Length: 378
Image (cartoon, rainbow, N blue to C red; front, side, top):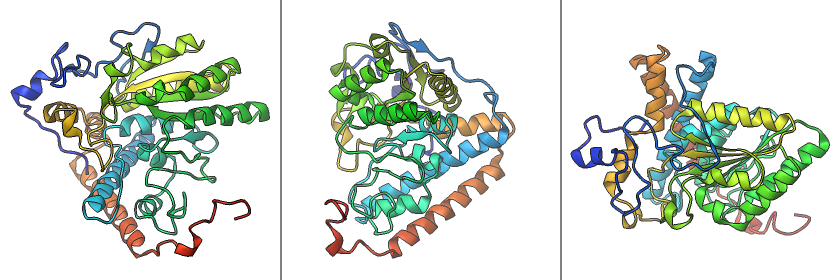
């Protein structure tokens, strides 16, 4: 289930891990130190979250639940790619490499009351939030039973009134001002809810980002801006979009905290989001959290990433696979062994197979209903 990592990196791959090394595409910010992701280098005002240790103070059953969510998200992501390559799913967006940040964020919130506004790469967040494997596959294959849109949206546009997931748009950054709206409503109603809105670093170059942060700061809204910085806005590397090293440094200009965290360290992300949620519930307003991570696959199934990043760079980051890292942590804690890992992977593989079968056998939307939910009164 989890992506295999190279246990004996080649000399070329090892070179990519040397601090200060320059990536083959010419960007100097892509190196990955041997012992940790390069978090907080060049920070101006943001806080750098410490790496996690041991079990992070969490119950062991919670840790096992996190591991399950990681495996389920990775298995569903891999199945989506398989269906795309088989010609069954016309378009997919992968979140492989983002899973630890998303699962850590989900578990740090109140999944019974809080609100999330994901973006199209947030499969693991939504799975950890309660979206089922069958729901995901219905969306991937655009079936009428797709609970998010009835097969009318592209995959990755998750939405659920029941789960308080606000459906996103393919237009970059539109979910950010919407998050200030849900947070403003929660403040006015006194519900105690926190909104978490996710986006890539490229979205922070959009005007929606500025407007959302500014409004949230003025009104001290209970919202967490969660930037999943995977270093590329499609094909544009970070150093060509912004002249700073950390998106989180932008928070200070709006008057609220910015935090940089290793997005491959699930428990470090959990701690950062939990602290931001506590701050928001206490009436202290928003926080901008930037999770440093990497996407293993191209931007989407229609993208060819060989034109803007090298295979060695990708393989170097695959050696920091967040699923494998968390699995190793649980092994060290004595919570997982080979037999338990094999059982978990087999159980989730069967779940994903059943979900795929259900979606393949489900009917497509009735073509005569194409305009439903488009016009008032429908």
